[in-house]
Image (cartoon, rainbow, N blue to C red; front, side, top):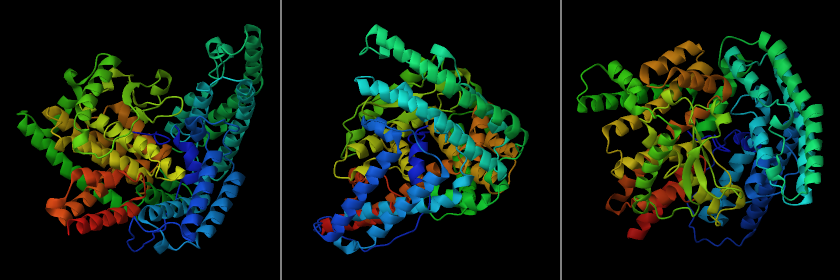
Length: 599
């Protein structure tokens, strides 16, 4: 699924600011048309603007996306996190003078999201040392490396700034190593099998001379004269050889030797001091709901049983003469479901995108202006990712893309490609994220803030809309959609199992193999992701979609014949991302507004 800013390596930067806690807040319904010229609205705008400035200051990714100058690489130190926490506390103090009944509805949403985000920053500090940021999904390095790879050279300052940032890179490496060493001393060490992924990842950044990913070739240096290019390139090589590579090599040596020797065989947060408490916290933050690991685990088991029955019904409809296990084996191995070339993946995905595009006007009042499409993920990144991810439009690339993984074609089943692309592109991530980014009514910080359960929950809810639209006409595509849903549901079981209930990874692997059609490689990668790389993140997909389906049923029941799917979908996604408790109140407001209009 999508790991954008999210998904999908960009998420590290925003997580510095936005990662963690929730305090619920209730309010009476207020009309959208209420006067917003008072003191409360003014304070809200000022704090929102200051928060946006902080986001831009702290996130090189946002600056890159907005086409702004990048002056510094992220400071990931504990001391800096304390500094950010103090700022968040001061912002919360300023919000105390706001009277909710003086705000219109959209302003109220802004207030609640601000409280949520700032409270997360404050409470996140408690768990700083339990957050391991050298894993593929959470390491800052792939995202920082991408900044260098996408750097635009136009004026003289661009060349000077590139060199300055490159000189900062060793400091980022050393700060990362200091954090890892402190965690090591506290007994917070990644499991052995995760280290087997991290060492090659870090080592891949160490390349000599012109092969280095930080080296800049002639075609990117057109503003310079040939003699100036050589001089600039030599300066880059000097920094790479004398500073960048030695810092990376020292880090790899530490991981290979001292760190790896103490690595546990067990997986999961439960084994670390305070790990279970941290996982409960992450579960609340990922889902944005006050759900315990016990409750989430139970929901997962119930959903697995329910969806498995749907798969068995499709098996019978297809006239498959065999057991459910035999049917799964058929789906997993039959050559008709696998591509022969990466281009075949792209063509298949685009055929579904084109079919969906014809249906959008019947289900949505608004669509983003930004175009969308599909292209292959850079091959050098394919090895560390099970799937692809959605890349939102930016200043340098105004088109939204689903970047698919074109490697290991014998393991890249197209069975669930239809459901996947509806989730990742339209009407999933692209419709939501691009529409939110383009919505000038929203404050700047809301246009660029995502909440895991909303983001992934919307994408999965949107993927199911294809069923109502008359898509998934092939029984195998429909079966693929259910298998995808089953995959998301098993995550609730194995994520909580490995991180909270002390499951060995072998048990999680067996559970997924018994219920899914994923390859050994994918299950291997996914179980490491849940237990060591990004605990609790994968809980958001299914929990978020269940909540949105629940809200739709409530709206349908309340509005009856007056229910309009286009208006409901617009209410669901039109105000952008928000934590699910805020979304519940927002949909309640929408229902009351619609009922009032029918009288």
